[in-house]
Image (cartoon, rainbow, N blue to C red):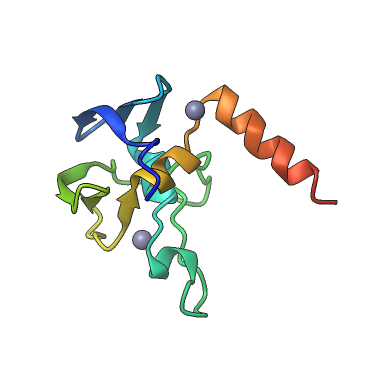
Length: 123
Ligand SMILES: [Zn+2]
Ligand SMILES: [Zn+2]
């Protein structure tokens, strides 16, 4: 197991999101909408060959949608020391957010640039 990417400190605000200070000194801040949209569960990603049911909470407001209920986390449970499981106010709770996944989706400019660079080398 690669233990380099464990969180040194985890700060959870149920209405705002999660902040992680990593052991390697990196910092990540995730809004609730972003985390919900990046849910790694089979339903959201279509891992079982089904149509991905990705949420779009962090997308710009849809003019055809009159009201979007405010999303928040009802509870966050640790999973086996390698992940957290989030119970969402929209009833979803099957996503297990491993440290690896959280680090991979870090929304900071530095990580965003790395991901973009990787995507660009593809073709
Ligand atoms: Zn999901
Ligand atoms: Zn980052």
